Amino acid sequence: MALIRDVLSRGAFILQKDLEEFESNLKSFQNVKHAFGVADGTNALILALRAAGVGTGHEVIVCSHTYVATAASVHFVGATPVLVECGYDHMIEPKAVEQAVTRRTRAIMPTQLNGRTADMEALQRIADRNGLVIIEDAAQALGSRYKGKHAGTFGLAGTFSFYPAKLLGCFGDGGAVVTNDDQIAEKIYLFRDHGRNKDGEVVTWGTNCRLDNLQAAVLNWKLKTFEKEIVRRREIASAYHNALKDIEDIVLPPPPMKDSDHFDVYQNYELESSRRDELKSYLAEQGIGTIIQWGGKAVHQLKGLGFEKVRLPATEKMTSRFLMLPMHTALTDQDVDYICQTIQRFYD
Ligand SMILES: Cc1ncc(COP(=O)(O)O)c(C=O)c1O
Image 1: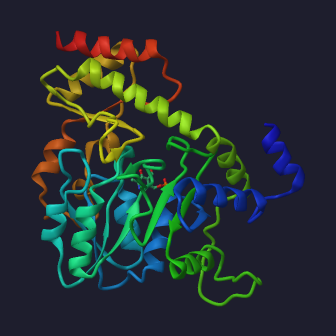
Image 2: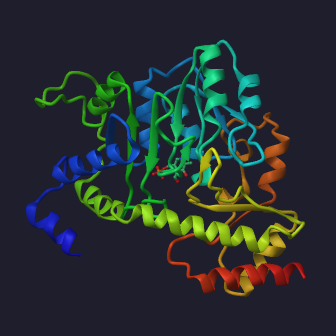
Image 3: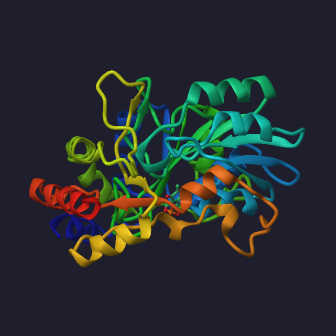
């Protein structure tokens, strides 16, 4: 409240110092050259695609197990989202990406899902071979790393969401675009504020897509404890893994491992179960809330978006099995034990 009162008393609402500070902190955290706070994660994607020159007549390859926003952003710049399968770790499957490339493909847009970063080397090889750019939807992956490098910093641009339930959540909507490319950075800077340059002159078409200064102040404050929160999320994921790994019916996400190429931050803990709906009801009866991400539908399974002819058997099988266990830093060790024991009891 003191922080919010301070922002209000300064009347600092739009493009003020809290936003500049947050952008600078985000750059350091990500080890990236440019960071821009924007309105939300969906608009972050639209801005990144526009800045990369993706538009009418282009195709963009997207994993179907993602939030509809990933595909919608492609649609709203006038391009066509081409939906592909996810692999064993629920991330975009590089082999499926390779097969989906056509003469129209302009970009690959992996979703860094559930706090994990995709196999970026495999994706980069496909992009290089075919002259494509990569734009990362890292809405769910702030702090996640692959081979030591942060999600969001592999491609031409990476985007984040600060929706309240995200790893780093603000008190409303918020998002960011990061890039190491100076030209992309210049375009994002202009597009997010009506095409206005540093002198306030309009020099190109732009829109209003700014992160509120009040939200930036909240994010700055929460960023201070963010690393500790990641440690806690990884502890919870390890506890789930150790307690549940021997249950035959359950397929768990990869556990946190010291020597792995992947440093996962567990935005979500998404497992697979052949008795998913039964398990969900049983846990609810015992006071444990679980979520089926996006209602158990991959994007190509959503009605009315024009994907009626798309068949992705591996993804369709998984979406009927996915279930997310509670994953947030307010969980105590006792909570986690209770959740694990309840799942064990269900299977006994
Ligand atoms: C994978 C993914 N992409 C994009 C978004 C969109 O972010 P926002 O809700 O901030 O627009 C989300 C957030 O829900 C997401 O999970």
